[in-house]
Every structure is written in C-alpha cells, then in structure tokens.
Image 1 (cartoon, rainbow over the protein chains, first blue to last red):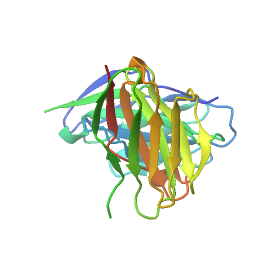
Image 2 (tube, each protein chain N blue to C red; image 1 turned 90 degrees about the horizontal axis):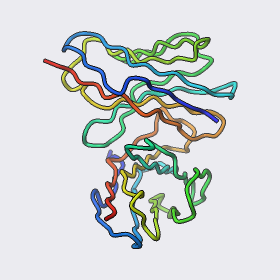
Image 3 (cartoon, each protein chain N blue to C red; image 1 turned 135 degrees about the vertical axis):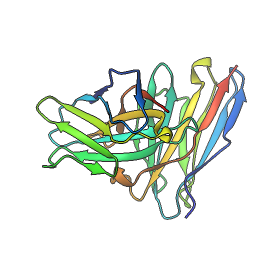
Length: 113
Length: 114
C-alpha cells in the first residue's frame, strides 16, 4: 500500500521568498506518480504539479517546482517568490497501481507580508 | 466551461439520518471520484465511478454508497449517520479517470452530524 508523509504541519514564509514543503513517500509499485495540490480555505483542491517516477527531469510549473529524489523517496515542492495568495493547505499525493490517490496529512503554509 | 459543482455546499444532519450528496462533473468527463476529508484521517478515497459503474472502492463501511447517472452526474449516500461522518466530501472529475493531471475537484460539501 502507498503512504505519503508530510512532516511539517505548518510553515511560514515571507512574501517574495522561496519555500520548500517536504514530502516522502512509500510505495511498492514500480511505476507511480506524485502530485501536489493546493487547498485554499474555500475547500477546493487545486492541482499544482505532477512527477512521474520515470521522468528524468524534475517537474516545473511556473513558480512551482518539484525536487524529486527517487533514492530518498522524497518529492518536495518548492514555491519560488511566494505571494500572499499562496497561503493555503498543501497536499502531496501518490498514485500507483491502485488507480486512486493517496494523500498526506498536508502542510499549512502562511505567507507573511 | 463550468467546473465541477457539488450540492449542497453545507449540510447539517443528526445521528441516524441519511444524506445524499450530488456532484456534477465537467462536461464531457466520465469519471467521478469521491473523497472524505476529516481533520483526523485527512483525505481518504471513497469510490470512483466511470460510465455508471463503480470502478474502485476505498475502505469504507457499506453505509457509504454511490451511483452515477447516464449524464455522468454522481450521487453519494450515507445511511445511518454517525458523528464521525462529519467531514468535507470532495468529488473530482476527469475524462476517463486515468489522467490525474486533468482531475478537477469541486468545492466540496461540508457535512456536520449532530
């Protein structure tokens, strides 16, 4: 069974600075995907970025990048140039052979002006 | 293009009652997945429907059920409500359920059981 661990319940960052949100995963599937979602206080889950286990390069989407270290089983999210609107819950998730998303407990990010 | 809609947005029920939640996917999407989010357990997969058939199911008791209609709209039902069923219920739609890059979530239904 897959498992996602997010060890940071809360993180604080100053506006315009970069922040890294940690995610480690455990899976026995040879092929898997890793996802990051953002959940504002409104409740809707917003897809941010995806990394496939066989992708050679780290995924990037605008200000979001994923620091994928396969040997360490980590998939950290890096947000560059933080904005006030980035304040939200962030969830790491994995998808393996079960074809269902397994989420971590999440990290609450607060961006200070 | 309209996003995923969920109704109602908020719901208050008492123990023992039953409840039905609705999810309308993005037009053209045939896969609908349901998730339960609680502070204690986090986000947990309930089930997935594709073309009116349940294709995947999470580890929830039989009190949780769902269905999908021919227009891809989906409903989930919880019978004999318990206090622990208080949660945010999220649904997500995608074209066929295999491309999670294109899975879009609705705003959720917040259920409170008293």
